[in-house]
Each structure stands twice: as structure tokens, then as C-alpha cells.
Image (cartoon, rainbow, N blue to C red):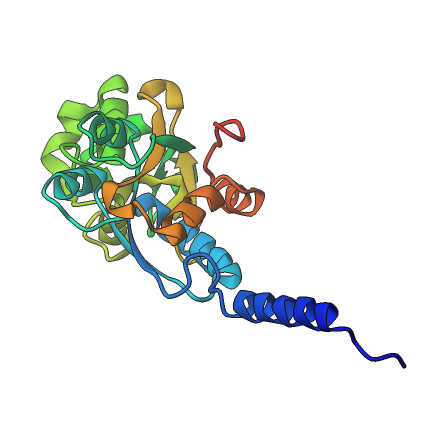
Length: 264
């Protein structure tokens, strides 16, 4: 075997250095930690999406905080360190974007639906008009002042002509997850909750649900944004892109969300 020439040795040595350097370059987002503020209707779906994402991005950490869309918007204005914000009403992130608090543009990710749900009655046989009867007991909705699902519940009850009759018996949750919990624990007999929560196996085992006609309320168009805190964070950008992927869309669809056209 002929001896390796000096120029060839130099080229080989240079190539080895490049390969060694590439081997220690961390994956995008490795070692990063991001915080996601998300509407409570996403509690089960987003947990699955995060788990799917982290299988391909094991070096980063995603912490998700669930709560009221309106309250999160207020907290972001006050400087809360959230990197992404998923709202049950796209109007909230659009307003923040208009105020210069977004990193990029607001993106729609789903349309939500509201349902009648009960842990003690067969909600499949219920209609909104049935709630006017005092025998239907206390009724749980999310607080309409800052929870989009609560606002849509109020709109539907008004459209059905039963708002005045049910108002004295309303129990209001701070968010839609707490609203469902009121029904689970017997603090309310019936709740108007997110379809995405009613489809969770734990709630599905406890009772059926009745889909509320979407013509009775304004659409629950949902959207998310990267906040200014996400600037320069590859993990935040990668997760935002993953939301539009086929696996993430499949999870949302399985939890009853209607989806915007891909790429919107």
C-alpha cells in the first residue's frame, strides 16, 4: 500500500476536525427550558403533543401552565415570562400582537366546541332548555369575564332563552378545567364544558355529553403566539412549528377540535 502523501494527510486531518466539531454541536433547543401558557381546554391534548415533541427534542424542557386565556393575556402584559401563549380565543393573542408583545404573528390552531356534561345524569338526553327547570340543580360554566368557553356558554344560554332562569343557580369556574371539576365533585349537576375535556377518558367514563349547536354562540376560534421572551430560543420556535405538523393536528382532532387549513 502506497504511503499517504502530505497534502492528503492534511485534508484527512481537516476532515476529522470538522467531524469532531459536528459531533458535539447540540441539537436545536438542547438544554433550553421554555414556559407555555395554555388555555385549560388544551390540558389533555397539549400534554400529548408535548410528549410527542420531546421524543424528538429530548434535550429541552417544556413546562406548560394551564389556566384562563384572559388572565394569561393580562399576565403577559405585566411581564410574565411565558414563551408561547395558546388562547381559547384568538382575539387575545391578536391584541397582544398589536401591542408589540409578540415575536412574529398570531397563528390559528383550532376551533373549539362546547357541550353539556354531567357525572350523575345522562347528558346525552339533555338540551339547554331543560336547564331552566330548577330540578336540574346547579349549573357550572367558566367565568365569562375572562374565560372564552364561559363567554360562549353565556351566549348559548341567552340564545336558548334560559339565561335568566339559570343565572341564580350558576357556579362559575376560573377556567374550563375547574368548571369540569365542579361537576365531577358534585358541586354542580350539569356543566357547559369544552368538548376536548369531555372526550378525555377519565371524564368519558363518568358521563356522556351533548354537543351544543354552534349556531347559538360565536365561534371559538383559537390561536397561539410566540411572545417576545421567545426571541432567540430555538426550542420555542421548533415547538411552534410542530403545532402545525400532522402528528400534532391528529391529536387535536382526536380531542374534538376542528382544524384550520394546514399552513394557515
